[in-house]
Image (cartoon, rainbow, N blue to C red; front, top):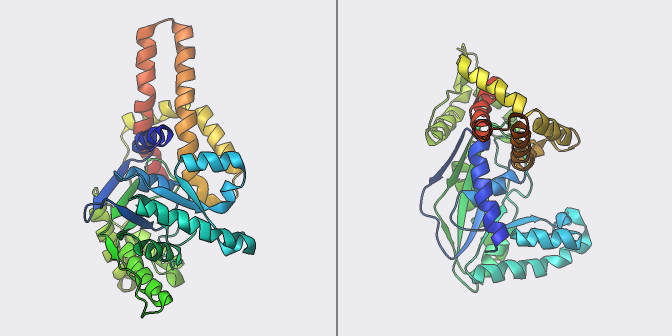
Length: 352
């Protein structure tokens, strides 16, 4: 693992603790060593990959769409970050010829005992709903299983809010699925379908799933009756039980609850807003020029982890030039991340 990857992983872990009010990870079984394919749901652009990579001791390679590898500089940098291209039909028929070379790379990595993260759905969608899986990971798994022992680890990523800082997120690692060697007596597509179905069912059990056909009416009813729990594993179980009971809740009276925010927290939130005005303005400008709204959370995180610390350092320098005091500058510098940490949960509750 190169130094850039190691540094960014540790820095992203620290940033996640500031970005989220609660980032919780559960393991239904230990994450295995050796050749592993992580298969996760995909709701929040590249932030999903950051969350999975930072939630395990493994250092997975990430499979990303080929279009971001077009020029030599981005190709070099992305590979330093352990990212590999995947070619899809929508990228053009000619690119599919490169798939064979790509799958040989995936197989070689798994033979070396590496791990690979792939999003089974093939693209992102912020709805709390698991869409059908593509066959890419199954093809990858069976190709590698001919040469080494391969396991699939299903992962469920459950966001409380996809876009807001100060919200909560649960990353759940399921029990590993042992990939059998291809059976020459059974059509390979049938074997793909069986593995895809098994993985899909396990990922769905690790997340909140509202059926796509009735999603719009179900999600509104779900949010009205949802009860908030402190522990996110308990929250997920309660949410899953609520989804099962939605049909019996239609027409019932709803009791709403307000969120009380102490005055001292509001004061700290105002202080933090003043100190983060310029970074937030930059982030909002970037978001206003972003066509895909599902990148909102990912861009807030990635841009924020760069510009917020940078502006904090600049503001501390200006504060020192004005006060000429190491003590007050130190106290001011310490107050910046602390006030941000308090404020993120205040604004999350206001926007909930």
